[in-house]
Image (cartoon, rainbow, N blue to C red; front, side, top):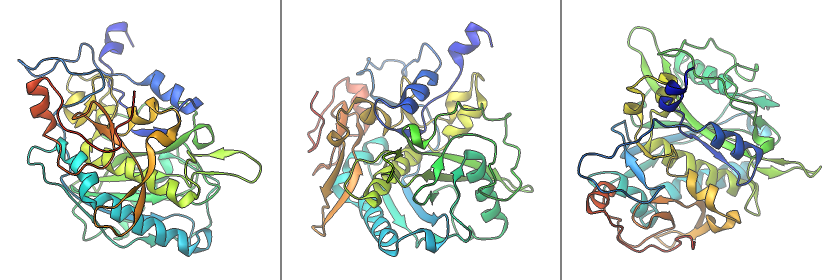
Length: 358
């Protein structure tokens, strides 16, 4: 690849990684966006990490469901119940959505959770991107995904305790099915950071079907925990691992809904049209959940249990980036102004609880 091609290569983030970890250093070192990145004509410059819209697919009315990998025996029933309840509550919470709605012109977003399922089979030791893509293909082929609107649905894959996640595009045998050849060439092979080095999860998409191919969106994450031998898997922040799972998927679902086709942008590589697949990212290639994690020290500045708007309890989440305050923002009582409108005015507005102090 020439130096000029390298400048144009599109490699935005689509992962959640722990601050200061080997995984963070590796993924950020490879993050790339075309330079110079231009705003729409007439718009003034905005703070360095504000999100800008590239024109790609976003999901205002999100539907999501979860598949628990490793069969019911690999999971505590209480963990599944807690994860399903808290994630559904967080994704539909009014005050949390008052932050995320700023990335939609109409300012209205919804989230609908469909009942989760457990998948048969022993818990895998290692799970790769190739495995999850094979699993998506298998579920699509056997009819398990019927009845969903693929344009607005994200399928979560929850990995059980002890399973290591990586971004290797080659299957490890953790899932069995033939992988469809992706469009526009193969996805560039990642380096070897995995969940023992700070990777918590990522989201992507798979093109499935032959007669009329469709795009299936997915998110995958580990059971973040400190193991009995002291080793760390994922990003353990909260006092109970199920809470870490909820926060990881809160991050991934919000990124998937604001930047659904990031996988196709990565596949397109240095194609001049690659950025057209992107939704909302920063000029550096960060999605809505990335910069808050990179900036936080300690992580508890952005990983917090928040009170739900309806008073029904709390949910563990990770604060997302808000153009309205130019940084991570927790629940807010009023909707933030549309981010495109803020950029047009050249100034941030609004106040929200939980903005990270800098």
